[in-house]
Length: 166
Image 1 (cartoon, one colour):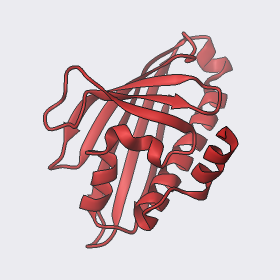
Image 2 (cartoon, one colour; image 1 turned 90 degrees about the vertical axis):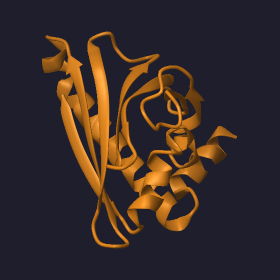
Image 3 (tube, rainbow, N blue to C red; image 1 turned 135 degrees about the vertical axis):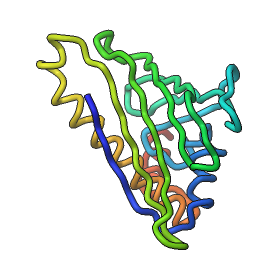
Image 4 (cartoon, rainbow, N blue to C red; image 1 turned 120 degrees about the horizontal axis):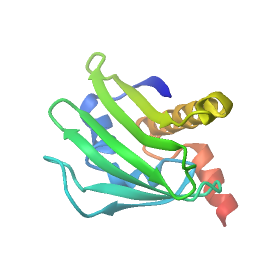
């Protein structure tokens, strides 16, 4: 399964990179499906702020451990692998790559490339449904990141999720 998404954020690349790279473990600040996110220790890629992060969701999907596998602050790129508490056993090698590219002085394009290996026959039975669900989550996450960077505060979906969590 491969999912590619992108969004243009109305902010300079260094400002966007701060939220994506140096604040990698702080994604629960802006992601509405995340209750918490904390840095993990371990093998830290060159220049990365941490080895990865552990995220707890508020949507019943449990926790995810995301391990940084690539981090390049000069090129504004990172990649990570993910393992989920409730991720089905037929889903293997879930990976995501983020690349930031300037689009003028005050705009940045973020491109994500999520890939996962889905075992047969589940790839036929569940592949399309999973791709649609994961695509929706990626788009929401990018929209929420855009809002956070452009406005300096979480997206209204995040505020609503926190209100529901109580």
